[in-house]
Image (cartoon, rainbow, N blue to C red; front, side, top):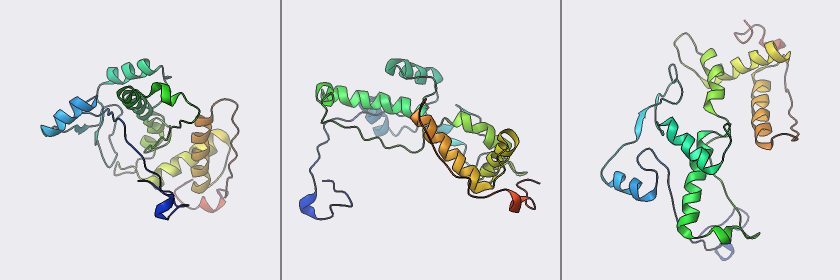
Length: 205
């Protein structure tokens, strides 16, 4: 059963049925292989290899380590080179579930919808890597604050936008939204402070 915050009473809840499932994981690229590997106690956690994690607090993850596999999934779904890994594997798993449920015709109906849950914006980690590495502290660690500071410095240096870290964070969010909208989209954001009060801090030191 599922309900929304706008329909808290039990009578307003709607019954849902899971008709098919598919997965793309480091220990199996379909439901059958994944389940067998999980029963055997296999682990997909390993050191990150699809970008350089040096200096990051966490350098291990359950990721797909084979770039050729990702590119194969990308070509299969006819996705562009800019689509991040999360989208590529998500589409692969979704297509598998639709196929297993024999639901292709049903989903072509105007009454069908798609709900996408994701752990992040459509922004490839490789695009953020340059900021992360430039924002390393003397200890070699990257923190959310140091990352925001580096992006804010880059705005001032390359775009002549002299702001504080809050302004830098706003521009990052606007860029992510603009990427989702594509050409022709319009995004408005506010630079909520100037960089004057940061001149005595390490932001512009």
